[in-house]
Length: 79
Image 1: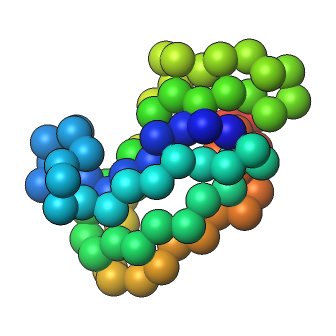
Image 2: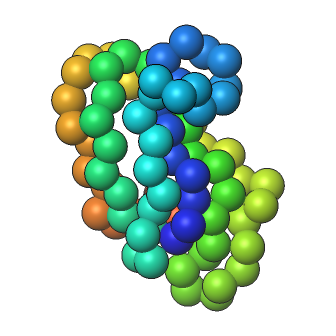
């Protein structure tokens, strides 16, 4: 939960003002609109142990325009 999630459309690895951004909710879920780019998630907190994940970086290459909704949380993908 609490991860900064954004779509990096220009490979700068920074959430620019014109790129979609959001924060994951208490369950790690989020919804974001995107075109092509990299889905980037930085930081957050493990929802089970409440351990801060300050050094966690998750990247997924996006290839088309759509709405992306993650309901299971990113942490579930990494454990």
